[in-house]
Image 1 (cartoon, rainbow, N blue to C red):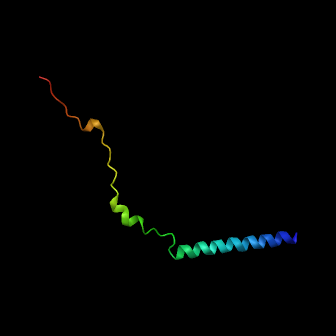
Image 2 (cartoon, rainbow, N blue to C red):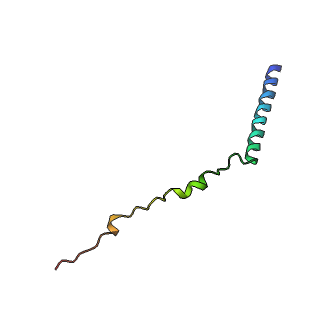
Image 3 (tube, one colour):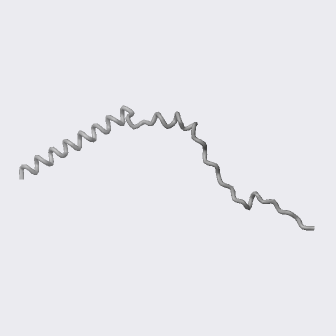
Length: 62
């Protein structure tokens, strides 16, 4: 039973260290994206598709 308490204690320490490492990396900007904004201007915007009915002209018959 005491081994179970030791394993639970160790797992809490490991989980706490991973949480501390994650919070440290977020605080230091490890997840900030510096590359994408600089190349975003190189990509074309997607064109909106128009329906064909708005582009047709009506002809009158004589």
